[in-house]
Length: 425
Image (cartoon, rainbow, N blue to C red; front, side):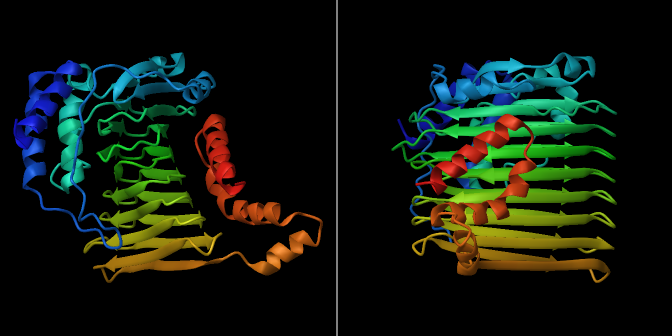
């Protein structure tokens, strides 16, 4: 069987396994054709020339939930959905969310349960023709949720999607869509557990968020993408008039990752915040971009990125602000800081300002890469604190605020455990 026919068969197998309507299969097939036509991508400082775009073979058997994941799930008191290797295992919606009229289902059920909303928003924030990995995701997506918060909904507890990849031979193509109606105020979270694997497949994860006028969406993510696959992550929000979308991203990956977190500030008065904390370790290569695109008038944004690197990790942090022509009165700030724990690690902090509008309120940036200040270490050691603990305390001084902003106690404790496990080695 030819490579093309094998891939098309993969598309049909995913759609059949998930019981999707024929209209969705047609969308998948169109996305696969787009994937074939798009050129090999170029990412500065990340070499993708040898990438074969292998998708692996989709398994219809649900993998076993690891004990670590089950222990995490058992602690969740809020609404959540659990997916193992792209297949749904559990979905829980709280009584509060049900009473508010929230729609929370798998992404595969959405075309029937919320047909109008699905047609209006799916694939509009992250399109298939952006690049090869977004096209591949739309062709093969398996696992993820559709979340709709009706007008005026205000729920403090998060809706959390937990993705588990057990290390099989198939690529991972999770995708979720979150829509917040006017005046809604919600939290959404994604947590990733991924096994180290020898499979050289491509993973592509997509999250689309639509924040309509005067809504507020807080998004938290806890990623741990491990060695083996090449991981592409695209998370983007379209922010309407006077709406707010706030990102808190915690990344402790040790694999090859190309990641984007972005707000498109489309409506007048829209606001965006991205807080990113990363710990690079092992031989990780993480290329992470936090981006704010100002389209509406009098929009505001802030990007704060803090990272720590050890071993032979290579991390690129890009903070990108784009102010398009007509985005009058836009204001933006960027703050990047990367700490080198070991001299064998490598880091790049790259601030970018792309400004096509003359009438800008403010637009500033600050970026630095350096070692831990030995004076600070000496000061703590002079108070009787061992050097290793002193180094950890200084690092936590930079990471603490972002970790504390995560959506729930279990998520915060998980990220703290992941970071401390690497810092204490």
